[in-house]
Length: 84
Image (cartoon, rainbow, N blue to C red):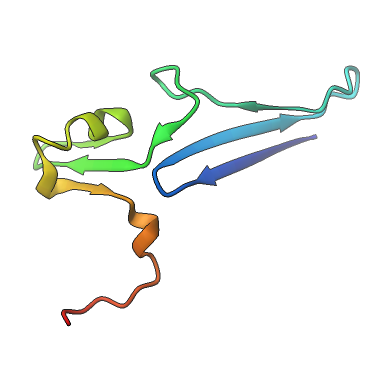
């Protein structure tokens, strides 16, 4: 049996896989590493005319590209959009 868990935090995200092997019966959850080898990925997206960048690369480039960088989206989900 296997299950996947996804954690979407305000500033980071991670994915874990739970595997229950019939022979070992260890029942451990392993957090999946991203392409940089980190187990936690910053929840940041940056975009330009040519590309979209996510994670740590987007977080590091936010100073150069602040107007096209999206972070802390979870904090504004569900709010009404409008100028007041």
